[in-house]
Amino acid sequence: MSEQRYNRYEKARILGARALQVSYGAPVLIDTDQTEPILVAAEEYDAGALPFTVRRES
Image 1 (tube, rainbow, N blue to C red):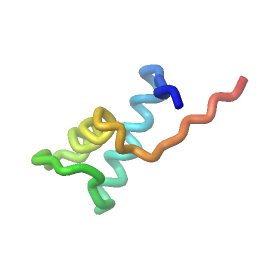
Image 2 (image 1 turned 90 degrees about the horizontal axis):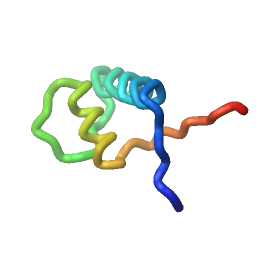
Image 3 (image 1 turned 90 degrees about the vertical axis):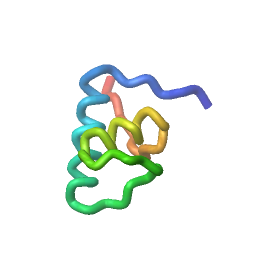
Image 4 (image 1 turned 45 degrees about the vertical axis):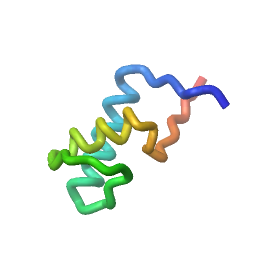
């Protein structure tokens, strides 16, 4: 399976959605010292731990 590449708009949407989830109390998927939801989301994204799927319409 090849690694999914996201454009900057998709990445921003994924990080924003995940940060919102974390800010509302969703469990963090990785071990981190970060407390800001957006930074937690960014670390999760970099670790490949986010279970998001992007559908692209053609």
